Image 1 (cartoon, protein in one colour):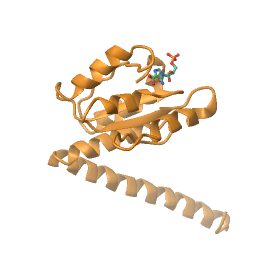
Image 2 (cartoon, helix red, strand yellow; image 1 turned 90 degrees about the horizontal axis):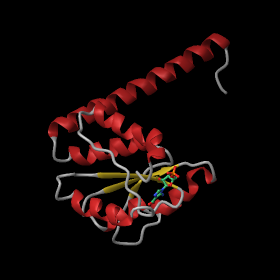
Image 3 (tube, rainbow, N blue to C red; image 1 turned 45 degrees about the vertical axis):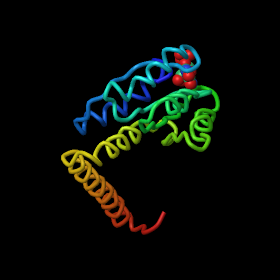
Length: 163
Ligand SMILES: Nc1c(C(=O)O)ncn1[C@@H]1O[C@H](COP(=O)(O)O)[C@@H](O)[C@H]1O
Protein backbone atom coordinates (compact mmCIF):
# COMPACT_ATOMS: atom_id res chain seq x y z
CA UNK A 1 0.00 0.00 0.00
CA UNK A 2 1.04 3.57 -0.59
CA UNK A 3 0.89 4.55 3.09
CA UNK A 4 0.21 3.04 6.49
CA UNK A 5 -2.93 5.21 6.48
CA UNK A 6 -4.34 2.76 3.88
CA UNK A 7 -4.12 -0.18 6.29
CA UNK A 8 -7.62 0.20 7.80
CA UNK A 9 -8.98 -0.39 4.25
CA UNK A 10 -6.35 -2.88 3.08
CA UNK A 11 -6.57 -5.10 6.15
CA UNK A 12 -9.75 -6.64 4.74
CA UNK A 13 -7.60 -8.31 2.05
CA UNK A 14 -5.32 -9.90 4.63
CA UNK A 15 -8.32 -10.96 6.74
CA UNK A 16 -9.94 -12.87 3.89
CA UNK A 17 -6.61 -14.43 2.88
CA UNK A 18 -6.32 -15.66 6.47
CA UNK A 19 -9.81 -17.16 6.14
CA UNK A 20 -8.60 -19.12 3.09
CA UNK A 21 -5.28 -20.09 4.69
CA UNK A 22 -3.24 -18.10 2.15
CA UNK A 23 0.10 -16.66 3.31
CA UNK A 24 0.59 -12.93 2.74
CA UNK A 25 2.91 -10.06 3.52
CA UNK A 26 2.07 -6.38 3.80
CA UNK A 27 4.35 -3.43 3.17
CA UNK A 28 4.33 0.29 2.45
CA UNK A 29 5.78 1.13 -0.97
CA UNK A 30 5.12 4.50 -2.55
CA UNK A 31 5.81 5.22 -6.21
CA UNK A 32 5.64 8.91 -5.40
CA UNK A 33 7.55 9.08 -2.14
CA UNK A 34 10.12 6.28 -2.46
CA UNK A 35 10.30 5.44 -6.17
CA UNK A 36 13.58 3.50 -6.13
CA UNK A 37 12.59 1.27 -3.20
CA UNK A 38 9.16 0.71 -4.72
CA UNK A 39 10.71 -0.33 -8.06
CA UNK A 40 13.11 -2.68 -6.27
CA UNK A 41 10.22 -4.26 -4.38
CA UNK A 42 8.27 -4.76 -7.61
CA UNK A 43 11.24 -6.14 -9.54
CA UNK A 44 12.15 -8.60 -6.78
CA UNK A 45 8.63 -9.81 -6.00
CA UNK A 46 8.59 -12.55 -8.65
CA UNK A 47 12.03 -13.90 -7.70
CA UNK A 48 11.10 -13.95 -4.01
CA UNK A 49 8.27 -16.35 -4.80
CA UNK A 50 5.32 -13.98 -4.44
CA UNK A 51 2.45 -15.00 -6.73
CA UNK A 52 0.00 -12.10 -6.75
CA UNK A 53 0.37 -8.43 -5.78
CA UNK A 54 -2.49 -6.45 -4.26
CA UNK A 55 -1.73 -2.74 -4.46
CA UNK A 56 -3.90 -0.26 -2.59
CA UNK A 57 -3.41 3.48 -2.81
CA UNK A 58 -5.48 6.63 -2.49
CA UNK A 59 -5.56 9.89 -4.44
CA UNK A 60 -3.15 10.02 -7.37
CA UNK A 61 -2.59 6.28 -7.20
CA UNK A 62 0.48 5.48 -9.29
CA UNK A 63 1.52 2.49 -7.19
CA UNK A 64 -0.55 -0.34 -8.75
CA UNK A 65 0.36 0.61 -12.31
CA UNK A 66 4.02 1.15 -11.53
CA UNK A 67 4.24 -2.22 -9.80
CA UNK A 68 2.54 -3.85 -12.79
CA UNK A 69 5.11 -2.26 -15.10
CA UNK A 70 8.06 -3.99 -13.41
CA UNK A 71 6.67 -7.46 -12.62
CA UNK A 72 5.18 -10.35 -14.59
CA UNK A 73 2.91 -11.12 -11.60
CA UNK A 74 -0.82 -10.35 -11.67
CA UNK A 75 -1.51 -7.04 -9.90
CA UNK A 76 -4.84 -6.24 -8.27
CA UNK A 77 -5.49 -2.57 -7.58
CA UNK A 78 -7.58 -1.27 -4.70
CA UNK A 79 -8.71 2.36 -4.94
CA UNK A 80 -8.55 3.71 -1.39
CA UNK A 81 -11.10 6.44 -0.63
CA UNK A 82 -9.67 9.59 0.97
CA UNK A 83 -11.27 12.70 2.42
CA UNK A 84 -11.69 14.42 -0.96
CA UNK A 85 -13.27 12.96 -4.14
CA UNK A 86 -14.35 9.77 -2.33
CA UNK A 87 -11.83 7.53 -4.07
CA UNK A 88 -12.95 8.41 -7.59
CA UNK A 89 -9.53 9.94 -8.26
CA UNK A 90 -7.83 6.75 -7.13
CA UNK A 91 -10.21 4.56 -9.16
CA UNK A 92 -9.51 6.53 -12.33
CA UNK A 93 -5.76 6.45 -11.71
CA UNK A 94 -5.74 2.68 -11.26
CA UNK A 95 -8.25 1.48 -13.81
CA UNK A 96 -7.13 3.41 -16.90
CA UNK A 97 -3.95 1.49 -17.66
CA UNK A 98 -2.35 1.57 -21.09
CA UNK A 99 -2.49 -1.58 -23.22
CA UNK A 100 0.12 -4.14 -22.22
CA UNK A 101 0.21 -3.33 -18.49
CA UNK A 102 -3.00 -4.65 -16.93
CA UNK A 103 -4.13 -3.97 -13.37
CA UNK A 104 -7.26 -5.82 -12.21
CA UNK A 105 -9.15 -3.10 -10.36
CA UNK A 106 -11.72 -3.82 -7.65
CA UNK A 107 -14.38 -1.43 -6.34
CA UNK A 108 -13.41 1.61 -4.27
CA UNK A 109 -12.44 0.45 -0.80
CA UNK A 110 -13.19 -3.21 -1.54
CA UNK A 111 -9.94 -4.79 -0.42
CA UNK A 112 -11.86 -7.92 0.60
CA UNK A 113 -12.69 -8.58 -3.04
CA UNK A 114 -9.01 -8.07 -3.90
CA UNK A 115 -8.14 -10.80 -1.41
CA UNK A 116 -10.78 -13.14 -2.82
CA UNK A 117 -9.62 -12.49 -6.38
CA UNK A 118 -6.03 -13.21 -5.34
CA UNK A 119 -7.20 -16.48 -3.80
CA UNK A 120 -9.03 -17.37 -7.02
CA UNK A 121 -5.87 -16.76 -9.05
CA UNK A 122 -3.83 -18.93 -6.68
CA UNK A 123 -6.54 -21.62 -6.72
CA UNK A 124 -6.01 -22.29 -10.43
CA UNK A 125 -2.97 -24.31 -9.37
CA UNK A 126 -4.12 -25.39 -5.89
CA UNK A 127 -6.98 -27.90 -5.67
CA UNK A 128 -7.40 -27.60 -1.90
CA UNK A 129 -7.77 -23.83 -2.15
CA UNK A 130 -10.16 -24.28 -5.07
CA UNK A 131 -12.32 -26.47 -2.85
CA UNK A 132 -12.33 -23.84 -0.08
CA UNK A 133 -13.47 -21.26 -2.64
CA UNK A 134 -16.28 -23.54 -3.82
CA UNK A 135 -17.45 -23.90 -0.20
CA UNK A 136 -17.16 -20.14 0.31
CA UNK A 137 -19.34 -19.43 -2.74
CA UNK A 138 -21.91 -21.94 -1.43
CA UNK A 139 -21.96 -20.12 1.91
CA UNK A 140 -22.74 -16.86 0.07
CA UNK A 141 -25.76 -18.54 -1.54
CA UNK A 142 -26.97 -19.66 1.90
CA UNK A 143 -26.50 -16.19 3.38
CA UNK A 144 -28.37 -14.52 0.51
CA UNK A 145 -31.19 -17.08 0.77
CA UNK A 146 -31.58 -16.61 4.51
CA UNK A 147 -31.70 -12.81 4.08
CA UNK A 148 -34.45 -13.30 1.48
CA UNK A 149 -36.32 -15.48 3.98
CA UNK A 150 -36.15 -12.75 6.65
CA UNK A 151 -37.66 -10.24 4.20
CA UNK A 152 -40.36 -12.69 3.08
CA UNK A 153 -41.30 -13.43 6.72
CA UNK A 154 -41.47 -9.71 7.50
CA UNK A 155 -43.63 -8.96 4.46
CA UNK A 156 -46.00 -11.79 5.44
CA UNK A 157 -46.27 -10.44 9.01
CA UNK A 158 -47.00 -6.90 7.86
CA UNK A 159 -49.23 -8.01 5.01
CA UNK A 160 -47.11 -6.03 2.59
CA UNK A 161 -45.80 -7.85 -0.42
CA UNK A 162 -43.76 -5.10 -2.05
CA UNK A 163 -41.55 -2.20 -1.11
N1 LIG B 1 -1.21 7.07 -4.05
C1 LIG B 1 -0.15 7.08 -3.26
C2 LIG B 1 1.17 6.73 -3.59
C3 LIG B 1 1.60 6.22 -4.92
O1 LIG B 1 0.73 5.94 -5.78
O2 LIG B 1 2.80 6.05 -5.10
N2 LIG B 1 1.93 6.89 -2.52
C4 LIG B 1 1.16 7.29 -1.52
N3 LIG B 1 -0.12 7.40 -1.96
C5 LIG B 1 -1.32 7.67 -1.20
O3 LIG B 1 -1.35 8.89 -0.51
C6 LIG B 1 -2.41 8.77 0.44
C7 LIG B 1 -2.13 9.65 1.62
O4 LIG B 1 -1.01 9.15 2.32
P1 LIG B 1 -0.65 9.72 3.78
O5 LIG B 1 -1.81 9.35 4.68
O6 LIG B 1 0.63 9.00 4.18
O7 LIG B 1 -0.46 11.20 3.64
C8 LIG B 1 -2.54 7.29 0.76
O8 LIG B 1 -3.84 6.84 0.43
C9 LIG B 1 -1.49 6.65 -0.11
O9 LIG B 1 -1.89 5.41 -0.66
